[in-house]
Length: 216
Image (cartoon, rainbow, N blue to C red; front, side, top):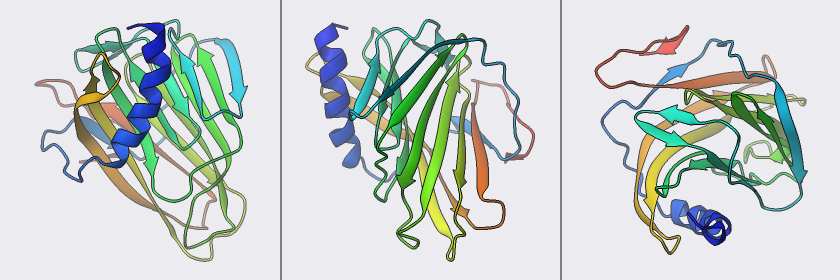
């Protein structure tokens, strides 16, 4: 994939996903984890921060292998979305859907075995407009994805958040030629603990994959 496409694709990707239909593939692609799973992220390689709408990494320094696909590139958006891509123009995106999810800064930590994308002071909840959440999302070399969400103020009303995982293919012009929503989950945040964690483990072909606290 050319360097030009690395910069052009994220913009096309963002607007194309907005018009994705609401259907979800029947095949189980991910298992949800509700109990904390400890992962070895490896040593920190480098750290980035930006006020721009996106951070693009053509080579993250390791390979993410998930369901017979491999990815070495990552783009993080300021709106609560990140995606991984490969030289065959295939992508997988992970996004927080709905609300005004735009934080001032986007931070990215590239580790030896994982990437962390951090959004701080993110306005999100329509039922609690003054509430800001901090989100740390990560993906490791095995395709395991996790979101840690925290907030400092008391939620007077529960906030509902949706996370979606989308799989697709870009054309050579940067337009999406194929995409499908392979996983979608909706969960409620309340004021009890002021934080929550959710993880997604890729389901392997012909193999049952479980994790502590998995939702079957």
